[in-house]
Image (cartoon, rainbow, N blue to C red; front, side, top):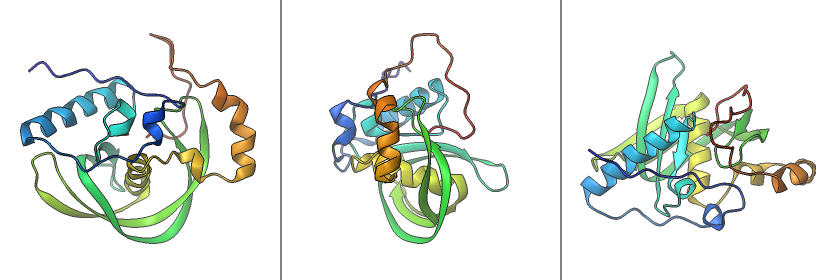
Amino acid sequence: MNRKRLSLRYYGDPVLRKKANPIAGSQAEIKELVESMFDCMYGEAGVGLAGPQVGVLSRVFVVDVPDENGERIRRAFVNPVIVERSGTVVGEEGCLSIPGIRADVKRAARIVVEAADEDGTAFRLSAEGLLSRAIQHETDHLDGVLFIDRLSAIKRKLLEGRLKRVRPPAEGSAEPSRTAPSL
């Protein structure tokens, strides 16, 4: 199958600030979009990717993260809704759409999300750790929210100059080393 190649959108692109719409289309179209999103995410060495990050204003995202036991969780979330949040935890985040910028972000420690997969099968998932963080980060993208919006005003001000210089990485250049995966 010859899937559509998706291109990542970067900080400053207005699509990243728009609220995504519930996804519509045939299951075949949704499956193709999801697989193209996984291809793009893996090509960028990320662990999560939302529709708006590839210019698709639909409520869909993909993740591939290890759980607490080291098992990989590779899943698509179609029209996700976080229905429960508990506890708080601070952890470092980065974003494929904001290369080179990383910061500590406070998130719910545990969440419950309801969504459908790419086949249209509804599911309910409890998550914590990196999976919880990735789901919250990607859900924010669906609402036009970036992780930098969750920083204090002082921290955002300190990042202002670096944010103005955000550009897509040069073709073939190495991504800066990371201590945490980019979502």
